[in-house]
Length: 229
Image (tube, rainbow, N blue to C red):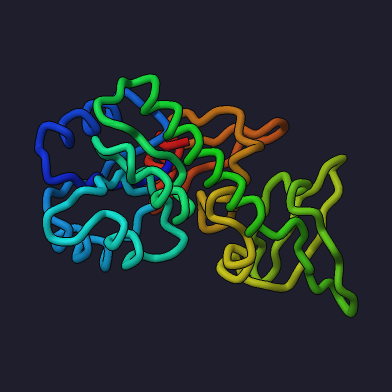
């Protein structure tokens, strides 16, 4: 799920976007703003993936506003004036919604943003881990990791066909090498990949051939993350 804010000087236009976001499972609208200054202050402390941004704003235009936010923030421009479309796309906008737009058109724009976000994550995510094992370095495909088990000062990286690799490193160090969008620490002694999880019930995570306990300190985090997946 991608996070977003909406910026429009017309409250009725914001109401439409808020209602459409509630219907859409791909985007979570965190806040709405009628003033660009308030929106900029919010983004300083709370980065988001996507902006729904009206171009024709009173203080500064949506075009100028977008130039002030982090470059990796996606934008879907909204406006009643079609002449702004070319300038909007020159800024690599995800899409351009001409008011009034319906839910289907809105949903299509969000789908483009979701696809772009997923592609960007895949491009940024390393495909292999380089792990020191004894006096050598092993190259482990990340997609092969079934789960990781902590054993005192070692980690046991479980791989397909009951194979495993023992590495002398901490759980924290390994998590720093893994994408937080693909792996989650569910216990002081376990890390699991989202893609391998078959079910979550009570305080247990079910993988293909094993049940993993969820630690007391990780319950809220696990529940929240799996609600979003």
